[in-house]
Length: 394
Ligand SMILES: Cc1ncc(COP(=O)(O)O)c(C=O)c1O
Image 1 (cartoon, rainbow, N blue to C red):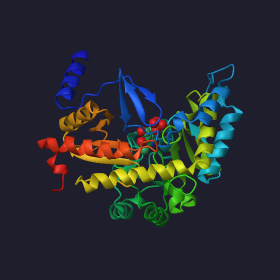
Image 2: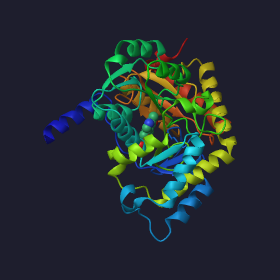
Image 3: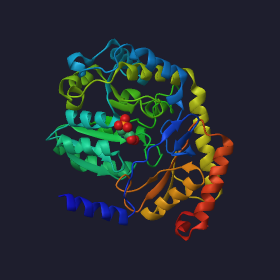
């Protein structure tokens, strides 16, 4: 066994796929440290800079009180008044009757999908959905079909051919795709879910706090909150805290409290984390300038890179530059690091084979000067190398 593991690791190293844990220290204003060097951080999901917001840190400290840990799962003795308060606040924020807090987004997706779907049911899932959705589907035992990314015609074709053969049906999509930064055609998906009598589950991990009039996400922006049965999201990205939620009907929440193993058999988040998430929702509501600045920054960087001839995808704060090959993408990441930028190269299996990329994550704290210099430096690095030419239009 040990020998097989070593051989596999060597294979990963050869293919440019070996990952290493690098200890870093997060700093404010879109910066971080690794060793004795400071970097501008373009790999953080702290899009709104809320993880260093004084109100959120104060809320965490206040709730830590004389006891830190929650000591048990929610159904044992781990459920505090703050958990209820966060769930009520989240439900209000998302415009749904109820919400349920999970310890992480991974746990929420795996737990909810496998609790709601089972043998005899069918799931239609976007091909680029997050690993936690893929794992939830596998665990559920339901029959599943993956439709081509954001391809409504393909989804319709699959629903037409397959839906009627199964008992219950669920369509699952991210609303902002984590590695591509593009937006799901949610209105069209809603029409199909109604036509084919399916539930809709939408993962708003990268949309929560950023899109929509109050920052609730893409469902709010598209005006389809009521049509989405399960809106999942995280407190750990734009909200700068930790944990996740689903917002749904009261019946779905109650059913999950009774059947969702990822919820039932896991210790509750501590009160300090819960109170920080409450403060984070308040900050999103009170400080809309953060999401306005974030989206303006992202549009600015995307515009600059496109002006310079780079084929940049997406339409959100996630700005992917697809280079294709794994070792070259890793090398581009190293070159950027030498210039003081932290952009983690993203390779398979996180993204499909042949689409290794630099996933540039913009925050509201990046200044225009930083973004302009970064765009120049990135293009210089790519132009210097023969391997990048596929990504340059001319
Ligand atoms: C789309 C999506 N869903 C779920 C998750 C999991 O969330 P968490 O980091 O809270 O486990 C992530 C995080 O990477 C994500 O990008």
